[in-house]
Image (cartoon, rainbow, N blue to C red; front, side, top):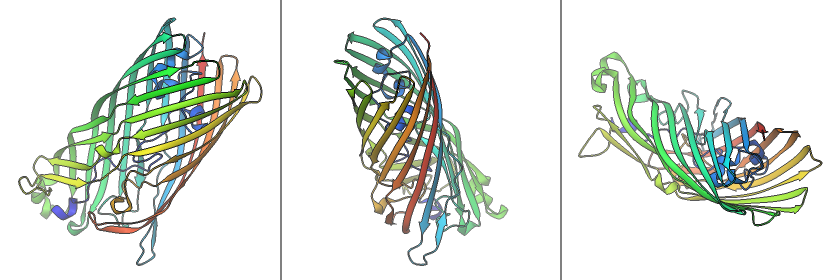
Length: 408
């Protein structure tokens, strides 16, 4: 029993749009400029820094948007040279936010986003089928916030985070001629965020923000063992419950925007992600002895060995006139684990990304389009914990459409 589950990784089935399973797609305008954060033109700043809503130039601002993410992972067995490709569906991260200036120095806001999650689907008979065949992760962040202007040029903001999530993971049980599915659609977690936002003069925007970790706790997940009938007594009749916690990591962000001319601005961001929290994953089954702990055979501990990472971002915007804006960007995002810890349910790479887009203003309405092309660095790996080795590479492309309305 230990052998069939030794490589488990609950909820880690995510094609990475950022290091680990973080999805950096929370603003179409921001993505076009490398997903930089020091922009307080509308409510889309709410996710990046709650303090920024104090500097939105209207009393009421509403934004919404979504992305399409096309990604494909290719695995090659270095002994047989056989290649396997994923058949992932189009990812569709979305976001929305609203901000309202209650008083001149007090603003309230709300952000909805999907900062972690995606789906990865390998062929059912591929070389790593006992690790993962298909895995879907969804997370939803609901984030109310408040911001106070400490001075005409400085503000402080804070937010509360309520998160809900779903994991649906299927893998093969080859020696039992079966499959295992882990499902939980009621995982929840809590967190917070806070930040400072500064506009010392008309040329500068400075954003300093922190978003806390969120522990997504699956308290009563369902494990379904699809094995021959004669083996069901060994698997608690084919069904069991499990508990687990998946850490969604914290993030520090420093962002700066400088207006070189009234029409031309440049932005830069530095992000630091606390992936070391994901050093291991523990699954606790109610009854099935599928674990690897000598004092409790129902508990399975799998090493992950993630490390903290950084992202570096640089973007620019040029206003061709009062209605049309052009945007470009570039960023680099580190993978959170070394080659020896590569896992196909979280195929992460060192990632270079180029971004671009255009924006249109029609009085109070704004329409933004963005696109990005990622160039993940291929890697050769040998993970002895799960006995899996080979080469992997990825192709990723994003596009997005965002709408904004600064009412009054």
